Structures are given as C-alpha cells and as structure tokens.
Image (cartoon, rainbow, N blue to C red; front, side, top):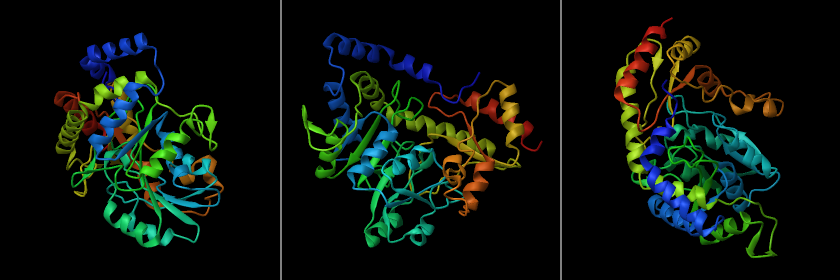
Amino acid sequence: MIPMVDLKTQYRQIKAEVEQGLHQVLEDAHFILGPNVRAFEQEAAEYLGAKHAISCASGTDALHLALAAAGIKAGDEVITSPFTFIATAEAICYLGAKPVFVDIDPYTFNIDVEQIESAITANTRAILPVHLFGQPVDMGPLLEIARRRELKVIEDCAQSFGADIDGRQTGTFGEAGCFSFFPSKNLGCFGDGGMITTQSDGLAEKLKVLRNHGSEQRYHHSTIGYNSRLDEMQAVILRAKLKRITAYNEGRRAAAHTYTKRLTGLPGITPPQEDGKGSHVYHQYTLLTSNRDAIMQGLSDARISSAIYYPIPLHRQEVFAEQYRDVSLPVSEAIAEQCLSLPIYPELESEQIHTIVDVIKTHAAA
C-alpha cells in the first residue's frame, strides 16, 4: 500500500523528541497558550521572516481572524480563487462579505493575476491569493494592483509553508499570511492548528485579542472575539517538525521532480509545472489527464492512493451555485475535470514513484 502521505514513518523519526515534550507538558499541566506555544510562535516567525506569528486553532480560523482583524465586514467584496478548499471562501462569508471568484492560470492553478483588475468594484476591499499545492502566486504584480487600488492582501498559505519567492517566504507579502497545520500539511500537527503572520504590530495585537474571546486581560473583554487557541501538545509536535521543515520540503521537491522526469512526454498526461517565480514545495503533486477515472482505478487496484483536489470549483458548489449561477470560469472548470493528485511526502522512495508511474503508463491511454 502506498498512501497519499505517510505520517507513521514521519512520526517514527521524531518519536523520542515528541514523546519527551508531551510528557513534560503533562507533568507541567499547562495546556493552553503556554511556553511551547510561545516558543513555536517565535521560532516560526524567525523561520518565515515575519515580525509576528500568532497561532490559532485551525487554518480556517487563521483566515477568519486575519480578515476580521484587517477590517473586512458585511457588504465588502474579497477577490479570491475558485479552485481551492472551501475554507478560503467560508472565512470571507463568516464576516458577511462576498467572495468574488477570479479564474486561475492553466499552468500554475493559482489565481490569474492578469484578471484581478477587471474584477475590482467599488465594494472590493481585499485580495486573498491562495498559494495552491505549494506553488507561490506571482505576488509582484498582485501587490502592485493592491497598492494602486488601496486593497488589503491576505495570503492563504495553508499549503505553502516554506515556499518562497527570491528568498522571501509566502505569508510575508501581504497584511497577513494564514497557515494550516492540518496533519497532512508540509508542516502538520496531530490535530487541527493554524497561524497568522504579520509585520504589523497593530494587527498582531488585534489577532491576539480576537483569538482569546476578545480579551487582552483575563475577564476583561474589549470586543467580541473567538475561542481559537493552539494547545501546548500541538505546539510540541510543531516545534519538532519545524526543525526539519527545510529537509521535508527538499524531500517533497525531490520526489516531485522524479515524478515529472518519469511522466514528461507520456501521452495523455501533463505533469505540474513550476513557473520559476517561486520555490514550489509540493504539498500536492497534481497532474492533468483526460483518463482520470481509468488511472485512479488502476492505482486503486495496485493499492496506491490518489485523490482529486478539487472536483468542484467553489462557484459550482451547492452552497454557492445559485449566487454564482451566471458566473463562468472556464479554466477552473476544465482543470477540475482533469486534475489528479498522486502520493507525495518526503519519505516517498524512488522505487515507489517508479511503481506508481508504471501503473499510470498502463492506463494513461486507456
């Protein structure tokens, strides 16, 4: 069996360190916003080159809190991608704002920056780019649009921890960067967890208050906040993995490049493409194929996992379908019908990749 991600193997490599840290947490009986959380926030900020890193309970909460702290409110419009997990749009809707979906680039699967300007209206307040599958959005021209049109930029970095553009990490370009530590992420804990990065002292203070019931001082509440705090046990796990994140991402990139070398030129298969504008960290290895069902069945028969991220673009989801019934985003719709993600993780061996590709070769032209 070849899984999509092998968390058991990764755990065995850090088991002693993690279990020692967890034991200490249990002995200290300090479980919420304790010393490991503070240390992780500092270490993550240093790694990413951010002035502040504020942890929270999930990646979805990170998006929600960042948008709230940035002042997004009911009636505002936020431009984003339709080809992403629904949390990106959910966070906008939580505040009564409206997601405005812009189609994606057919090669990177990220938002097509050239189409953003035409989607801006008098109600637009922010752009929420998603660094999908670990490939950074082309932030230079996006930031120029935001600067010229006086728009906030909140980055969705749920899949891009460690990805950079010319040495500058995703999550440090806009007002805030939002990270997820869901277990399967490049940097993942053993439950839910999230984090917001920012260079702004003021935004950081707002986020700390919002994540803790609107409270800066215990039992004193200055605003309506939320219960969104990272616990000490998850912080222990994240601190252990953060030490190894560069090696993890290098392992993912090596596996991805082995895939691409073996798949390039195969009829009916288009491997993922790096645009050269940033370092892709391959949270997912997602190819395009016109024979997806046959390949998935062949992989399943060989006890090899595969997945479709994402089969239905957000503007076609049931929850949004009526609101966006007249919206056509042809690239997103076409990619959703052809995309297929293969197993990808740092511990994936070349022999396993060769096995996977041999199965794909058998079924690619079926």
